[in-house]
Structure formats: C-alpha cells, structure tokens
Amino acid sequence: MTAAEKYYEIMTRTPVTRLILSMSLPTTVSMLITNIYNMADTYFVGTLGESAQGAIGVLFALQCVIQAVAFMLGHGSGSFVAKELADKDPARASSYVSGAFWLGGAVGLFFLIVGLCLTTPLMYLLGSSDTILPYACDYCRWVVIAAPLLIMSIVLNNNLRYEGKTFYAMIGLTSGGLLNIFLDWLFVPVFGWGVSGAGAATALSQVVSFTILLVMHCRKAQASVAPRYISRDPRDYLAILRVGFPSLIRQGLNAISHGVLNHAAKAFGDAAVAAMSIVSRYTSFVISVGLGVGQGFQPVSAFNYEAGEYDRVRRGLLITSGVAFAAVGTLAALGFVFAEPIVRAFQSAPAVVEIGTFAVRAASVGALGMPIFFPVNMLYQSIRRAGVASFLALLRSGVLFIPLLLILTSLFGLLGVQIAQPAADLLTAAISVPFIVHFYRNTPPAAAKPSGT
Image (tube, rainbow, N blue to C red; front, side, top):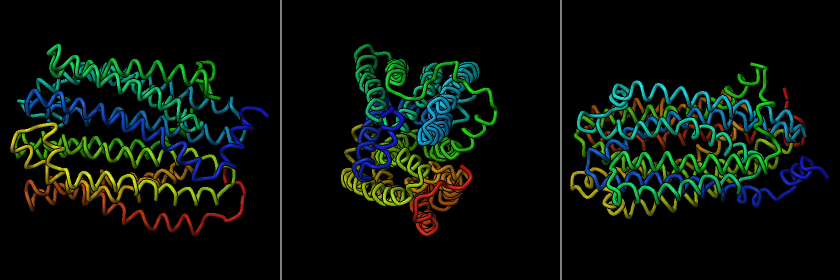
C-alpha cells in the first residue's frame, strides 16, 4: 500500500470522533502555546507601564493583517492539497503548497519594506496615541522583520495539518512559542531591553519555528515545497486566493476591528487602550481553543467531502461543535469568575483593572457563540464553498462588530467599547444557525463525488 493509499484509508475509515480529536488536540495545543507567548509579551511589557502595554494592543492589529495573508495562503492551498491527496495525486498537491509557500515569502518582504519605511504613520493609522508611539515603533520594527518567516511558517503549518500531520505542525509552533516566553523574560526584565526586547524575542522565536516546520514538512509531508513544483498557471493562484479568502476576511477584519477598537478606546485614555489590549489577548486565548478544534475538523471535512463520505462530514460538524462548546465554555466560565485577577496579572493600575474586569466578563459571555460560528465557517471553506464561507467570515469582526462599536460607543460611551465585540459574537452565532441547518438538509446522504470536482 502506497503512502497516498494508506492516508486515504486513515482519513475515510478511522472513526470520526477519534480522527477529529487526534487532529484537534495538537492544533489546539499549538494555538494555546502561541497565545500564551502573546500573553507573555503583554505581561512583561505591562511591567513597563500603561503606554508600553498599549503598544502591544496597537501592534496586535498589524500582526493580524500579516497572519490574515498567511492563513489565506495556508488554508487556500491546504484545501486543494487535501483534494489532490484524496484523488491520490501528490505532485499536483505539491504545485499548490509550493506556490503558496514562495508567494508568502514575497508578500512578507513587502510587509518588511513598507513597515520599515512607514513605521510612524502606520502606527497612527492603527490607533497609537502620541505617548504610545515610541513603544509601538520599537515593537513594529521587529514584527515586520519577522513577517516573511511568519507567513511561510503558517503556510507550512496549515499544509501539515491538511495532510493529517498535526503532531509535527504542533512541534514547530510550540517550540518557537516556548522559546519566545523564555526570551521575553530574558530580554525584558533581565536585560532591560524594554518593548524592543519583547519584539526581538518574537522575531527570534519565528526563526526557530520556521526552521523546525520546514524540516518537518520536508521529511513528513507528501506534498513538497521545492521550487521545481511551483505552479506556472495563474488559475492555481486564483483558486488558492478564492478558497483562502474567508481566512483573509476573518483575520483581516480582526485587524481592522482592533484598529477601530483602539481608536474608540483612545478617546477614554491610555488606560482604556491598555485594558482593551488585555481583553483582546484574553479573547484570542479563548478563540484559540475554538479555532484549534475547528482547524482539526478542516482536513477531515475537506478530505471526506472530496471522497464523497458526506455522513462523516455531517457527524464531524456535530462532534466539532460539541467539543468546542465544552472547551470554550469551560474557559469562558473561568474568565467570568476570575476576570479581575486575569486583568491584574497583566496590569495593576486601578483604572485598567476597572475597565478590563467588566470587559473580560462581557467577552466571556460572547465567547459562547464561538462553538457555533467557527466550525460551520471552516466547514464551508474546507469544502470550497468560498462565497458562503466569506459571508460568514464577514460577520463577526466586520459587518456586525464595526457598526455595533460605533453605535454603542455613541450611545453608552466606554460601556459601548466594552460590549460591542460580545454582542457581535452572539449575533454571528444566531445568523450561522440557518447555514448549519441548510448543510444538514441539502448534503447528499449517499457517497458520490461532489459536482464540479
């Protein structure tokens, strides 16, 4: 039995619950570690004061933009890798992943050049105040220096996941994440390098993650990123961008929403910006669990849908939502109960604690919508229904959040800033339900190749 045939057997015959859990657990661990090191940045920089911590919130938006491009390329190419491997064509799969990998490096260089040349205006655009600006500029330089390797790492990580090699993808991300936490401690409080030290720690950890992921991909993946496999057909890249577009929307709007949130919070002082920065990190930590479980479902749904195993996809969606609800619900409950200690762990200034505590509790309530809207969004993306997936991706951080933020802030002031995202989360979940029902009602019950593939 060839490697392709063995993989086909695993993906279509392993019990769905066991398959999803085996792929979700490493992915979730990877995302948790990634968010823990992001929180480590917030914690160590928080010891430098409110303005320094506000810089982390400002740069979070830029990091979301870079990751948005990376996930678009990673998810877009990964969906086609799963399709081609289901059709037992590793060479064709290689053309997708290699094209996305090298294109990602080129886009990363663009971020590097623009970021270094336009640092100050970019920081103002993302919501920096005059007092936050020096810290934001220091951190920004390191973020854009690491951008090419970050994008290429995310492409490698996602394609390893779509090949079912989630354990190896986890090793790459967690190694860099743990190193980042250690370097944050070493560079900020020990060496006294301030915000620039936190940025340097992040950049160096990206170098390590990229190196490990590249080695893992070269040794373990069926598809190759060797330059000789790069596709010369523009239609392949358009297909990658089309299928990956929901990820760009999801992450890109996250960046835009953080920029808008920073601008809204700035009207209430640096304490509000710092507080919402902490809340954003907390929310991202909770989201990482929902995303981790959902991303574990993605290769299962993509592969089995292409193979005509529709019952497995339906069961997988139900199992994914249930597991995500149990995990996210537990974290949300802990966040609601321990909101004040969570905020104090990052910043003890009374104004920051007061603003952040209520916002964390509100975010915990809103998080209960995530197990509904994340799995169905990823399902439609994985089965290459880009239009539906793009619409669902637009809701949480764009179509709903930005208008709600503007309206609620004008009506309720700071309270509106604190409750806008939770309100958008719950509304997104409600709108996603009909799409779940539609999939269950309209997916063929019997195994057959999907039309148009």
